[in-house]
Every structure is written in C-alpha cells, then in structure tokens.
Image 1 (tube, rainbow, N blue to C red):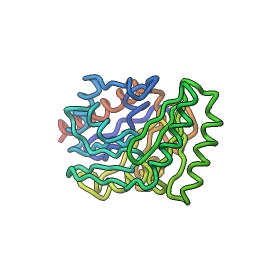
Image 2 (image 1 turned 90 degrees about the vertical axis):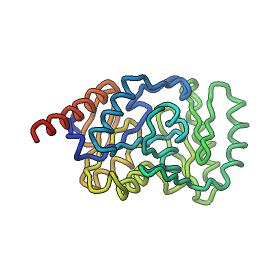
Image 3 (image 1 turned 180 degrees about the horizontal axis):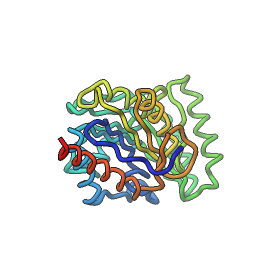
Length: 251
C-alpha cells in the first residue's frame, strides 16, 4: 500500500465516499457529528465536476445523512447497503424481519451496562462501546449469540468501537455494485474512500471493476492507497476537482 493517493480527474470517476472517519472526524457519539460548510462546498464541487457521480456509502440511516448534508440531496446507501437511493431518487429498502425481537433483547442487555450506546436504524442494530472499551469482548459474544439464532438471516460486523447486526449478504460492496449499474455511475472508473473494516467489501468491489480504493488512517487493507486522515481526504478531493478544471481548460 502506498501513502498519498494521486489526484484523479473528477470527470472520469464514479465517487463513493464513506462518511464518519472519512469526510468528518469520528465523534464521541454519532449524534455529535456535524458537517460544516467547507465540507458541504467540497462535496458540491465534486458533484458538479463529476456530473453527479458522487454517492455516500454509510452505516448511518439515509435520513440522518440527508439531515447532515442538507440542502444537498445525494445518491446514498445507508445501513451498510440495507437501504439505498439512486440518482433517480428511487429508494430501495431491505425488509427487516425479526430485528424487533433482537432489539428488545439487546436493549435490556445494554441498559444494564452504563456507557454502551444502542442505535436502532430500521434494518440494523449497532452498539457503540467507545466509552467502555472493556465491554468489547462480552458485548461481541452476546451479539454473536443473538445472530446465531437468526438461521443466517443476519450477521455481525465489527467496526471502530462498535458492533453491528445487519442483514446477511448486504454490505457496502454490494451497494457500490448496484450503483455501478445505474446512471450516472455506469461506465466510469469507480473510486471508494473509507476508513473502517466495513469499507473493505467496497474496496474489493471497486478493485474488481478496475477502479481504485483509498484507505483512510491506520490498519491493514486491500486498498492500494492510503491517506492519513480526514484533512488529507479533503485535500485529495479538492486536488481531484482541480484536476478536472485543468482538463476543461486544456480541452
């Protein structure tokens, strides 16, 4: 893996961007994250330069992404692909069967252990243990037991100080492949930028299509490029937009 990804002319790429830890710094709790005007302007410029071929791929719900990025209304995959909105505005949602019972069981376990934070997103359940890292092992074991009772319908995904139960067979990579079948993404070189283990399936998807992937921060990854942090991602996106402007002037 090489550090310092080269700028990519924005017009020839299909851009897939993770959110937390990639476009914004990870906060103490998900609710504390804000998107400032500089980030909004940067994403708006990338959208313009790429002809609209920008999608956000997040573990958050689509409604949360829309609220954070308002007034922008971008193509987006939420809950690791359990819900997806294409450039046409059409919304696809995976039916969440049996998650209500898991939610009730998990809530009782979490509420008896202060410091844990349970997020119910509709099709997925996440428990954040950033405040109590010593609970990671028992939490993971309990959630694996819940998943084992679903007969393969759900799986457990680890992340940065979080465990998440999501529908099996749905991940960020599958969401990217769906986008790549639709305008304005189809026929372009896919690029994915992300910081977490949940982004590895998307890295594999874009590399399989002849695209490229950028890992943000430390850790092993199949991505061929690495950027050290959020500020580096911003600088790289701006350089890619500038490369598009240079191509326009040359043309």
